Length: 451
View 1 (cartoon, rainbow, N blue to C red):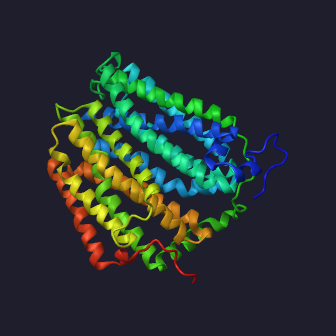
View 2: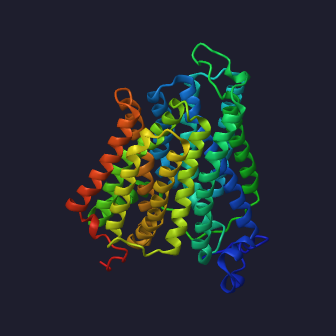
View 3: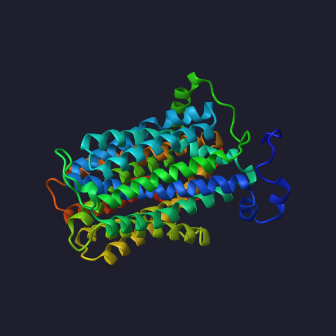
């Protein structure tokens, strides 16, 4: 690893890192603290928008197809441009790219908050701002993931990534709870003025504050990022521009020729299509259409899922070899249980019921998320690991919005209980078919023999 010795301060004392607890050494490093503190604020702010934006659209239109369209405008550009974003990050400083995206998101969210407060927000404005947020995210995700090797020593990467992942799950627990409570407490304000193409909507003041807080989080995190000093990092020199598409194609060919990788990627693609859409669309619709629920309930249910996911990751660290036979059989068994738990979601009549179901779903998903990431890292050659993780993200960022849009259209003709039952039942059937017809059940934790 090369370190910029001209920097006034090295990012981490290499000698101390060998003799003290890795996490303790990380938190003594000013660079890591600046970057982690800013990331924590930014991730927390993202959760406010994650709750406020679907709620805003539903209050404006009550149309699930419109909600699916808005989520697609965020997610599809993010998925389509994420590989280009990664190439741009490889050719420039990840810090510079990340800083630019923070300023762009700050501007977009500030405009969105201002329009909500003024009561002049139209649906076409929501579409445009959502598209801008999606495009900015396509570049911020690869920039943020590429930052860590430029801030900490190679020996500290695993501990640093573990802390970052844990903090992300913590924000996924706290953020929705705080956002839902904020929207419920403030209720309607002056922003709920009726416009021709933007009907009056409840909770407008709380929604505007949620967007404003997210904008503020980007401002503060941009300031903390400016304090971070980077070094050369652990990555290889950037490839020539003409080699980008060739490199992507070579990675896809390698993954397709690996039978177990191909099976898992196709299986996860089906999961994204059949499950992610209902989660993103049906749960906010369930909360908004049930008199006994509401914005606070929506935040509580989503927060329970985040808390369960965090707990699942902790359990995975404590008992990493907990298996029902092989790794593949464990994935299938957990997914089948998730499908069964998902089926009664449309019948809940109290917040605690939805929170309990989503907490257990998150627990199972969080446990397997750590195992799956570890398996990919062991399975894929280091030279292809970046492309493998990009493909993994593309599956959930590219197919999930398609699922969300289709779900919004399907909900025009079926009820919520029917949607949840069909989605969960499909997942159960999918796991059974994968167990019988594919090599999924034979996937093990062991790294493959050198070929």
